[in-house]
Length: 288
Image 1: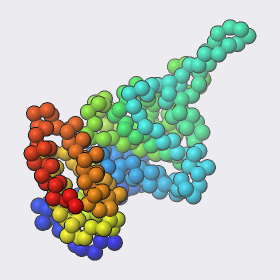
Image 2 (image 1 turned 90 degrees about the vertical axis):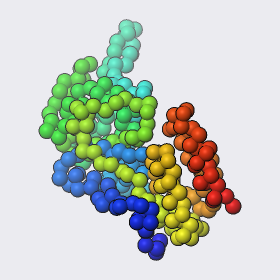
Image 3 (image 1 turned 30 degrees about the horizontal axis):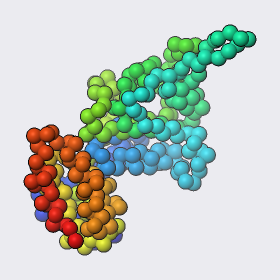
Image 4 (image 1 turned 135 degrees about the vertical axis):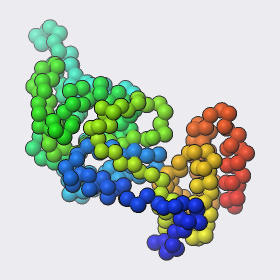
């Protein structure tokens, strides 16, 4: 483990976020708020944390009990093509005695709710804002509120009612840098407790020291450059990027194939020279 005292003052950071976002999420859940939205830049630990929070809630792990996990955890990633029929209910054509008929079939979320009506379960939705949430949830958009859990509403295609179980934990994640998304409105945000997963320069430092050949001084220099790049471009560089970076060649490969293209996409055409004129020279100091 990293032994060097992380020097936030050296980086000009007044204070790393004092509240650990995972611990904050756990406290929210313990108080009975079971809709949580984890927001932040890419690679700040949202998806990783969502799984571990689910494990805590169910007191089980995917590796230790895969059968329980499959029954009681629904893990999906939203995108622009998600529809009400995928999530809640759809009509499926079938032939009945030679005649075309339609049968109502439950979507993934409704099936999960029916299967776990009287026991704790978890739904994890990655990239919540990549779909039209109100349209995908339909009646469920109203019923996910804690005050309406256990209340039933009729489904539009028959086949009974929809009920959101009182013990269902709904964890959603949202990439705050993603531009190709549906805007979130107050009606949606009011249904969730939002926890921000900010970039942690201390975790970045720890990853570099614990999982690589870098010295502590090297790690501080890299963290300082990452912070400087963020100040130049306003692009937050997630600390989890540095879990798999082992040495300077790794660092430069990651810069050229991951960070640099991301910066070019993030910056407007008028700002693109920031990368070539200012960021490239900063990173050049790490070339072997």
